[in-house]
Length: 269
Ligand code: G3P
Ligand code: CA
Image 1: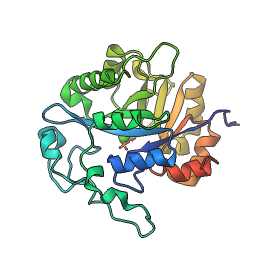
Image 2: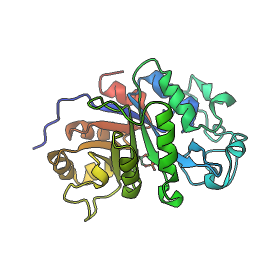
Image 3: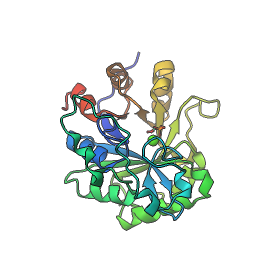
């Protein structure tokens, strides 16, 4: 029988408050902070001229009015695009602040780090490296250089880092762990595979970032990871029944597109 653990479950805004505002924009992250999210999730990619930008897809086609792969565009090209117009305005939305072009231009990781630094309270950041193998280490190198500029690459021993790096790529996590051993790494998993069935994670990861499907289909796996001393973060958890499942199985963090509603369900709204 599974017992819920005694801890406050962290609520992480997936791509910002991305149910309400266009994902990976200042509008979505500002709203997530206002809504009380404990942490922000973002995906990062390198532009052709070496800037880290917060974009999920390989191409900008879905989330902007432009076309093309992030890796072939320069930051100046991306700065011409509108990353907000694709998102329809819900009738129930009382705060269409994301119609402000300043809040919907391409978001650099640097700007997101500034937002977090100015939040006025502790807001953690969960940064996911997307397609890191393409760049043979440059994504991780730029990431750590940037975190270093913000004083985040080497948290004092014993102090919890406000930043963590996540990836589906064990190789990417190995690079981070080698270059910046103080930054926690999170191994993302969509499925339980023979390689990780026994509860071992690569690159010294102490946290598994699991798809909610794993919790639905293999709840015993969560116990196995916990017994191995790992923490469990779960994505993408928008359904109240799934929130309940995460609580019941003792997950340490819920990654959701709707942080406000999840916080309310957890009695923290
Ligand atoms: O937080 C992990 C989750 O974001 C991984 O999936 O496709 O949303 O980046 P994706
Ligand atoms: Ca992600």
